[in-house]
Image 1: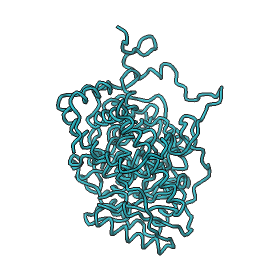
Image 2: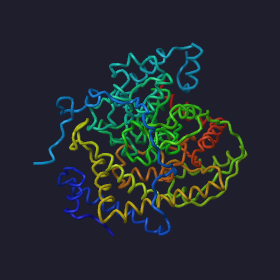
Image 3: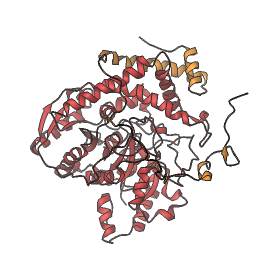
Image 4: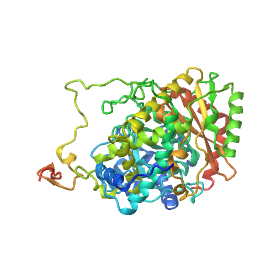
Length: 99
Length: 459
């Protein structure tokens, strides 16, 4: 059974993903979604009712920086913004959020 | 002086004995890049294209996959988004190599963002397999593997999320080592699936792999997932008799030539005193599903960073594969689907981890083929709906569980293409994995795979 997504669903996901897709891309992705969702359905073969959710593959505990540890890899301001195309007075220019 | 085919450690010893200088080595490998790079396309940024190369020739040459940040050297992850990005800092792996007198000898081609298993999704064109340039070198670390196999560089650094070191190493006839998750810092590596990503070496010998791993490993204050590990040298000379498990689910749908070599290798291992025992493990087909969901979820989150505000080009520059993965990841994480997909996959991942833990109580290692087939023709990946997943089906379980694994070359198939076999070990048991691989190298010389290729790539 193909689980292809509807065009509206694809468009909603594209919006959430902050991507602009052409009509051809939407169509292709919708059909590939079907194949993928069909395959991963096999996970339901396995009973996970007694399994806790995983947080970390190695069982590592939280780690903390000591206060006052020197951050040797701190960047200078000019280095930090050196790759930005849009900057002003040593700061990143970001898109407007409020109208 | 004969340099062709010498391992990294042999070359370092020659440098130490002052038989050759690093400048001369640099010149030698630059000459080979000049001669063969046009056929192979291993590099995104070739060594001589680096304007500051002169400053670096003092270092011992090593190639670095283009998803490792290199201060002052363009780092693209083979993507148009980052085509002009010059990092202001070094990744921890690169910094550790520089501290050990290595120099960055070019940045190698890869699948864009490491999304792929053939190096064909690179935004800068594919890398060719040195065994047959009409075939793919594997991926995503395809440039690192092709360059090392054709001896354009003595060794390279790659990275894998699930198979991107082991699979290209197998297809190019090399040693590829994926360490335990957290053994090597991810700091400064352009991320793919952060709970999976592992940097590691692609080399001509097992000793070289152990040597590089010792340099790049270790706890790092800039990557909180790194593990405190032994700071000693690895022993790869452990010759104790080991129990090596074989799981029949890992032998399904594999080329007959690979199965034949696999069985011959079991006989060699028995002759070396090891015991081969059947084990049962969760079928790798479930790891494929876990990987498809979790990796894409992490991709959608990681690639959210690329909005061109701080660096790089805007999101219209994403290639097809990245868009597809972001979309699927967004779907798995979105309201209404999270429980059915993301959470379910996390729980199955937990089952896979527990399953390996249980099996490693009864055996030391598990052996399996690295790939279902040897190198395929370029362009064929389009025919498979989940090409990467299917080519890495045998690599995904170890990646899901975060355990160490090595791929070593074991001769050629009937098409004269290299076959790769893998050993997987328990968490932080790199030494066992390396030791058995080393024994097989000493016993068989990998059936002369490396020497055979270099007959086609003379000085």
